[in-house]
Every structure is written in C-alpha cells, then in structure tokens.
Length: 173
Picture (cartoon, rainbow, N blue to C red):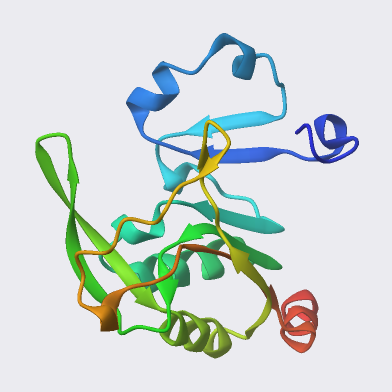
C-alpha cells in the first residue's frame, strides 16, 4: 500500500491466510478498508488481475493442482511469486524444522515451474533474487546441508504474464 500511488483507493487486496493469523491481525492493518481477509479460498468468487504467492508455494504438495485451480477460477493476468524456492535443480521435498516440528517443504526446478506456466499460456516476464535482511544484513540462505546438486543460491521473485492471445480468447467468451 505504501509503494503504489493511490493504492488505497484503486486496488483491493484479497488475502487468504490461516484463521489464527487473521484473528490476530495488528490493529493498524484492520484500518485499511481495501484489505479483505479470508481463511477459505473458496469464498472468493470474482476474477483477479494479479495473484501473488509469497513464501508459501513450498508448503503445497500438489502445487500444480493449486495453481491450475487459481488460473481457472480467477483468470489472472499476472502471477507473482516472492521468496520462491526454485533454481537450476531437480524438484524435491525435504523437511523444514520449525521449533520442534518437521514441516514438508518443496524446492522446485525452475524449469518445472516455467514449463507449467507455459502450458497454461503464461510467459515468463521477470525474475530477481529474493534477499532477506535482518538488522540490515543479508541473510545467507541456509541450504548448505543439501548435496550440491540440490542447493540454490537464494529464493527468487518471479512474474509470469498471461499471453495476450489467450487473454483475448477469454474476453471473447
């Protein structure tokens, strides 16, 4: 909201998050009238121009099914990923240790992600390294325990855009 001029008046944000997170939203966030929070993806019915997935695709076992559902249901023009665990590796699953729990987590072959979107009539538009800073210092991505062929330098931010010819087909139906 702070980075986009007039965002408070011209953009509505539909945020799907866990129920406990929504229950504990900071008071300041609740004051923005264009932020809408849902704990159930199925409640949202209208088309979306942009779908943004930040730091969560790695927790979805059948990521292709989820992305296909989002494309079919919301007909987005853009898909934006931030903090996507993808690179020049084979797709694999591992366990992320979170306090005393092990959470299944996926690392993606960027080629697999790219092929998925190309098959869905989207093209690759942009990517950059996702850098994480704590107290102004870049954090080294902690995957040094993996064999070399499964390591990525860091997560990435990626943008895909629906192909123009496919957008026209959707509008004509």
